Structure formats: C-alpha cells, structure tokens
Amino acid sequence: MQLLEIIRKEVQHVLSELYGSEAANREFQVNLTKPEFEGDYTIVIFSLVKALSIPPSTLAQALGERLIARRPDIFASHALVKGFLNLIIHDAWWVSVLNQSYGLSTYGFAPPSGKKFMVEYSSPNTNKPLHLGHLRNNFLGWSIAAILKANGHEVVRTCIVNDRGVHICKSMIAWQRFADGATPESTGKKGDHFVGDWYVRFNEAYRTEVEERIAQGVEKAIAEKEAPILLATQELLLKWEQGDPATMELWRTMNTWVYAGFDATYRRIGSQFEKTYFESATYLLGKRAVEEGLAKGVFQKREDGSVWIDLRSEGLDEKLLLRKDGTSVYITQDIGLAMQKYDDSQMNQSIYVIGDEQNYHMKVLRLICQKMAFPYADDIHHLSYGMVELPTGKMKSREGTVVDADDIVAEMVSIAEKHTRELGKLANIPDPEQPFLFETLGIGALKFFLLRVDPKKKMIFNPEESIDFHGFTGPFIQYTYARIRSILRKMSPEAEYDLSQVSLQPLERDVLTRLEMYGQVIRQSAENLDPSEIAIYAFQLAQSFNAFYASHSVANASTEGERQLRLRLCLMTSHIIASSLSLLGIAVPERM
Image (cartoon, rainbow, N blue to C red; front, side, top):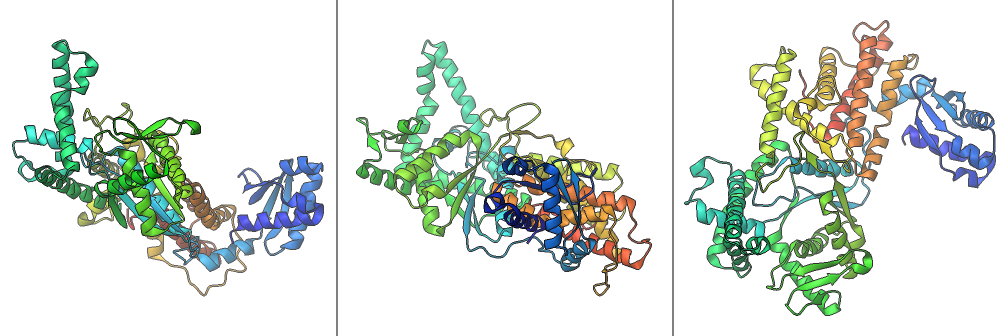
C-alpha cells in the first residue's frame, strides 16, 4: 500500500476514534508538503474544521498526536501551520521503502485485477496518410492501454480501419481519371501518401467543376450537388456495395498500397494493435442491426426508403442510419463494430479514443446501443481529446494542408540531431549508434509533448519547443536517465550493506517521496484515463533527482553508508524513470 493511502486510512481511523464514524466519512485532502514548510505530507483540515466545529489548532494537534501514537513506525513528528497538519515521516521508514524496492523494475505495478478493457485508437481512413492529429490519437491510445495494463487489467488494443465509403471512392475515381496507371512503385512514393494525393486531386477537380457550372448560371447548391465527378463517385460507392468485380479489385489494390504505408509509420512510432477491424466488414453487421431495430420499432423507415432514429427526446435530433439507396453511413458501421467488439472480447469497458469533434456522434452511438438493449451499451466510454493545431492554425486534409505524420517524425529526428550536436552530447556515442539516439530523442520528444497535456485540452504543437534539454520535455527526462546510468556503470549498490544507521538529507527525502508515490500516480492516471499525469510525474522526478545530484556527490560521499544509499537511490530512480516513460511509449538512451 502506498504511503498516501496509508495516511488516508489512518486519518479516517483516528477521526472515527475521536469524533465518531460520521467524521471519518468527511472529505479531506492529503498533499505533498510545500518545500518551504517542514514536513513530507500535509493534511488539509479546513473541511473537517467546518464540519466538526473544532478550532483548527485543536483538531490538528489531536490528529497529529493520535497518528504518531498509532503508527510510530511511520510518523516521527508533526507540525501545525494554520489550517494544515504537516506530517514528518521517519527516515527509517523511507530507507525501508528504498531497501525493499530499489532493484524492482516493476515497482508500482498492480497485480492482476481480472478486468478486461478494450482500447480503440488510430482509426485511419484509407484515402490519406496518417497526420499530426493521428499521432496524438495513437500516442494517447497506446499509453492508456499501457497504463491500464500496469494497473493489472487485461487490455486489447484495437484499430478500426475506415476502408470504405464515399471518401475512399473519391480517391478511387481521381486515380481512374488522372493517374494514367501510376503506382507507388512507379512514382517512388509511400503508398498512403500516393493515395492521399488522389484524394486531394479529387477535391481540386470537384471545385473546378462547381466553379464552371456556377459560371454557366447554375445555382451554387445545385452545382455542388450535381458536379459530374461527385455523381461518378456516388455511383462508384453503389457499385462497391453491390460487389462489382472491377470496383472491388481497384478498392483492394489501393487499400493494399495504403496499408503498407500505415504499417511503416506504425512501426516507426511504436504503435501496435492486438486486433484490427475493417469498416468493410462491420458495416454489414450494422445493417443487420438496423433491420433488427426496425422490427423492434427502435428505428423508422421513411417513404423514400431511408432509415432514421428519433433522438429529440434525449436532447439530440433525428439521425440517419441508412440512405434511401440502402447504403450505410458512419454510425451504421459503428453499431456493427460495437457488436463485434463485445462478441470478440466480452470486455468490462470499451474505450474509444476519438477527437472531441465526434462528441455528438459518440453520444448517438451509446444511445442507440442502449435503445437496442445491447448488454455493453453502458460500458462504452468515449475518451474525447482536443485537436492538435500548429502555430499557423488548423489543418485541412481536403486542401492538402495537413502535416503528415511521417514528415513530422522525420523533422523531430532531424531537430534532435541538431540540438544534440550543438550541445556536444555525442562524445561517448559511437557513430553507428548515433542515428538510434537521434530517433530515440526525436520520437520521445514528440510523444512527450503530445502527452504532457490533459487529453481534453486542445494544444498547439511546436517542434522546436518540444526538444529542450532543460525544459518540460522528454529529452530532459531521457538525459537525466542517461546521467544516472553513467553513474551506475562506474559503481553499483551493494545489496548486503546495512543502511539502518544512515540519516537522510532533505533532497534525498524529496527524491524518495516522489519514488514512493509512483504506484499511486499509475492508479490515478488510469482512473482519469490521463497519461499527462504520468508525464508530469516523470518530469518532477527528474527535477528532484537533478536537484539532489547537484548538491550531493555519489562517488565522493562522506561515508560508505551515504554512498550506498545514494547508489540505491540512483538505481530506483533510473528504474522508475524508464518505467514511467515506457507507459508513454518512450524509450530511454543508456548513453548521451
């Protein structure tokens, strides 16, 4: 049990003992003590004072005395600061934590819980390459899955590939009309970028046709609806749903090009999935579910043959499920996907990592599943996250103004190389190992920057700012790890050495305090589905270690006991930095 949990339980016990069971159920906060005050943990007693009508000093004194009496092995003394009770933890207790845990690379992880989670992320369309927004999505999804695993849960990482629909047909029709048989091989282009070019080409041709028809006197709305290339695209979609052989062959060929491109990007950024679903399969399940919903009266068919659900009583509106020509829409495949997921995994919760522009869509999906009485409806959870913007503004894929994931990754690695060379951090790195270091730092900086912000918030990505060896960045933490590993290559702690008589310096206590709370941070991050809590923790731990190391020598400690304690502190810190960054999908370099 983490110390924070122990303190909470002990305070509740003392409150019950002194003031009754109702007092024990009152809310109160326990925080790390601020550096300018004496203490390790602080109990904020304002809420208790108000509820119990007891003067702050009286309540704090009573709590402090009883806590020390109950757990003299943990609490050495206490200090009163107005509405706060500061607790001082015994050196011996901190040292015991260090002795028990300094060699454990899995410190803070929970035992198996028996619960299963499914985390869906990435969800690309096969008409364009992955872009910067997909990177935040992938990093969030992968990290949430890793954090849930660290909490003892079984996790299935999934991806839904949106491989059908009118957007796919737009790339197909543009390739048919303008490519003249070109392929990724003949052009030397990565497959997903190649197909994405034809999606942009479609929109260019569409705009031209609309402008020409408007110039001929056609109303804008009609020109947009009846542009020849759009009508041809809609006809192609209908052919696809009817299984037209030529259409299906072109669809399979272009998707194969895209998948090869996606796989290369996923390998480079370290994104994996246990199971991949395809919209081309799940939409059929969705269409069958719509037929079932019609029979139950959940959905309604209009005179033109289209199928809808009326959600106005739930504060939404009417939602289309099948078009009048029988073709499906996004929500149709998502109904089928929800069914397939549950049939495959019987999970306790299904987490969808999807941008906040789909908040409405996800509300509709959950409501439809509830109205269909699906057993998993209430376990659908939308992890809604804010979009990533550049300093220049929003990205638009139709205009070809998005920043492709491959380009931003390459830029990050290049920036990492430039900064590393400028700072002279390559002295101990052989030439063949340097590209791997640049890759580790560049991708680590990218992941950390995109994960250090609360997922619910929108963010602006600045490549240069993300690689600062002295800032709130991944490379700062990676450099701290490499520094510690350099110390440990020269000397290592002796397991048999007795530290019982060693006293702790304040900066050593500060590092130990942060190390001990790692398990609590992992649990809280999982409860909130928020990797930024891990990122902030890793950064603060690195800061604490650097402050300690700047003031206290390890090799030249005044006694052997001090040296052995600091070596154990180094080893445990290196394990937890590596562990916390691994939960963000970030590797650590052994040398810099």
